[in-house]
Amino acid sequence: MISGKALEQLRLYRPQRRGCKPALPLASLLQGLLFHVLFPSGTFAEHLRQLSGWKKAESTLAERRTALGWPAFAQLLRQALRPLALLKRNPEAFWHGLRLVAWDGTQFSLTNTPQVQAKFPKAATRRKKAAWAKMTAVVLLEIGLHNPLAAAVGEHGQSEYALTRDLIGALPQSCLLLADRLCGVPVLIAEIYAACRGRSSHFLIRTRHNLLVQKRRRLRDGSALVEVGVRDPKHRKKVTEVLQLREIQVRISRPGHRGEVLRLWTSLLDPQAAPALELVRLYAQRWEQELYWRQMKLELRRTSLLQSHTSLTAAQEIVMLILATALLAHERARAANGKHPVLQISFVKCLALLRPLWLTLCLAGHVLSPAVQRALCRIFEREIQRCLKSKRRARSCLRAVRQPIKGWPRMLRPAYTNGHWRYQIIRTSRP
Image (cartoon, rainbow, N blue to C red; front, side, top):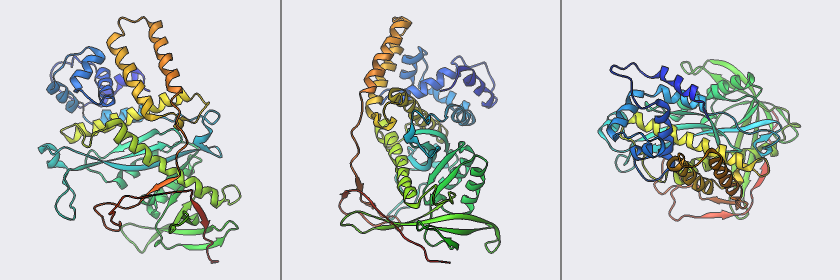
């Protein structure tokens, strides 16, 4: 994922420090961190000893991580994450030649240490303060492979909106961005539109129903061309820019259940090249981002809290979790080999096979010859190729929470519905 020369260059981003040069190489430290997050049990010192033979105390490693700082890990993300899908080998990751990407954020729970509580206040709930402080992370995802392309972590407590704006410059060439309602505001859409123009890219974003637009022309497929005014944040009555967008309103439902109306804005203005119904079905793939977070939090990490005791090391731990998912995306894409969709390779089984392979090569690598090691890797790769999943059920869980937040219904009993979605384009009135 990243060359040894690039790892050594990360030292330039380390803050100045006094004293002798650290004995533990930076590459060994970063590889040990990645090895540590991939294994559910054991300490960082134990895993580092197993991986590279270095015997260091936990306190020494914590001091080294603190001295390393955050910029080196931010640079590591920029150099290690890159697109994987190829049009001929992974057609499911593209739409009309455009790479399907999405971004969304999530929150990680931090331990209640004095260092964390001094920097991250707990959110207020209906009764008292929340049990844990939260750190936000946003990932730009290649949804056809569950491969992260870029990431931003709120090491200083930044909001999801601020982190999302930081990722606009990371959009790849010739992509189609799928985003939820957080991005569905004119100010942010204007920034995304400007970035897409320079990259031959487009976007499809869900927006709120109370935003006012000027409708210009109704199209044959039921969508409409609209003009959206972008207002100055400091002077709300001043319109700084007018965006020409295409609006799609659709009602989605399942047999026997009440439907819901979605409002989508897109930069794809041609209804013949991009029919409205086709775009609506395409937007449903944004849910792959939620499945990516589930794989990271429930299947890879398997703990409710981050193990780090400071905000800096917690941000570093999140970076390593993201890199671990990128490593697994590489292995799944290699195992699929263009013969199967990458997401049909089981994430859990691939992880279960990768862990003993890496541990075996760490502990017995000096005993096994290079030829035997390569043969062992090929055996594991063939085993991963057999880890094909069956087709997913057409199922949807209840959109409610047990402890309701503002605007969310309360869940008294978990429920889900079966069956396929029905889409009905709502034809807009003439301007």
